Image (cartoon, rainbow over all chains, first blue to last red; front, side, top):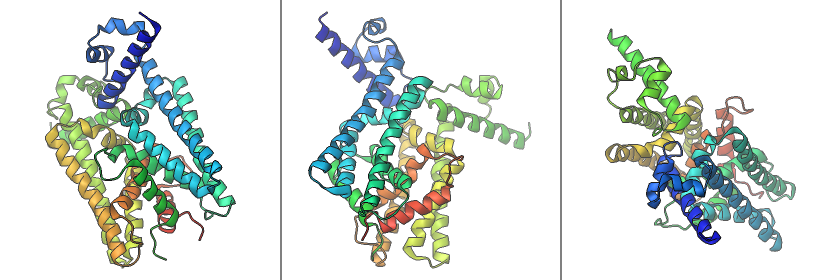
Length: 198
Length: 198
């Protein structure tokens, strides 16, 4: 087997595992289920992966990195445009929702199954989640400091933004009337302007 | 066995099932796991419940009814106080977060496991979820009509409110610095006033 074919087979295994973890959860997916979906013998999976938990960690860790990269890109783009805190918030929400829309299965596994990792790996994912949350908190705090945002509690405001971002996987449908970008823009408008008629 | 003892045993079974479904998911919880947690023989569970799916439905259906009752109570209270759309929104969010805080396990099962119900029961839960979402949409639409809220898209605004409400189970801790009611008030202030400094 060539290295590339081995890598492809590995990607197939991870993709099949992700679909199954999303459909029925990590615990109730067996190595045999993953092999069955690919038309392979369960034993042959171990050529490519060490354990079911390794696959879960790979999926969850990659998802955490993808959100972090999307946020980094939003911050870089906002800085390049000199768009200020509002632009940074808008791009951050847009990029987050786009990641969820592009990887709905991953989002489900990321949010539901990460807690089943062993304590060490769970701590590593938690650190990435905390860093992500902190970045949103800094974004709000920076906006307050710059005079663009009202003096709200940055932690609660960041949790509000992340609630909008994270709950999206529960209701978004690619067949719906709004794209991820359109939802992001409306959510950010609402967050910026508020509901109250003044 | 008296009817009351039977009812208590049934409640114990549902409570044990709920904790297990929340910890490791519906699919990977067996009737034997539930019996083990209660120090019973698996076969004896069937005196009280017909199937594992019956228990899941009971948990999820009761959770849906609890959210609906909390919302109804919020609307009645807002009406009694003549508080208008802002008060109704604030009470609705407060009551929702309080239900989540009081029943964290239920919230996890409700949000993660309901999709594993058979199609007929899933449709019944979906109808309740849709009705709940529609009530929030009506609340926003009513506020726009009354001139209290800006003319936003009521569906997206309702989804924003419900995102804040529903994501709460993921991060709330009874040991945290804010109570559910305090979080609700800050979230609603943010939603009403917006982030932007005007």
